[in-house]
Length: 212
Ligand code: FES
Image (cartoon, rainbow, N blue to C red; front, top):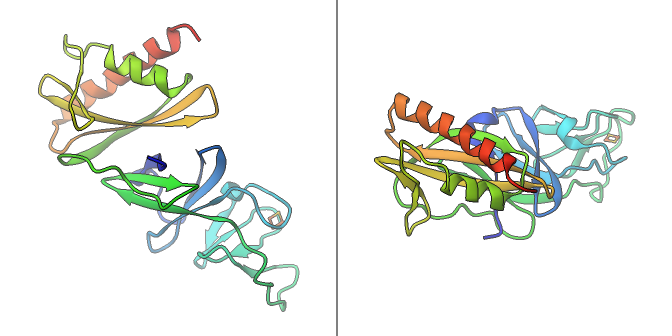
């Protein structure tokens, strides 16, 4: 699996940009006015400013520093200091593959982005950052009791605790942080979602308290 879950779809509205890390690449992820998603190397081709600081305008991602505009295919569309100039085709942001499925955004820096096939229907619960690597997050989640029971891992990969099911996608941020994206089985009650959300925070305390 070369694709990384970089965020929940609902957390990236139209015309917004966010920063992510995928397979060691710093990435700018943005959503255009029509809901389309884009993942680019987070470095402006002009002077290297992070494109995640930029803004979406007229279907382009514009760099905050000198305002160069880049089309959805990454090519430079407009240079404010030289408005009459047709930018050369060689000026282009590096574009990566991105997709979204079941409320999660997936990016690959090396391949075509693909979401894993999951059994059942899932809804986003929340994203949660952990100050520890993904292995510790997974260990804590599997060893923190929920409603008096340790979660069990189903053959298809999701966790169950009693009648509650949870899917966790972990994205490493550097060596010592993780962003975890949590989904629950579609139809989970509000009370169940709240309980799971609190349980995730308990698991985080446990993950972060363990030895480094
Ligand atoms: S660094 Fe991006 S436009 Fe200059």
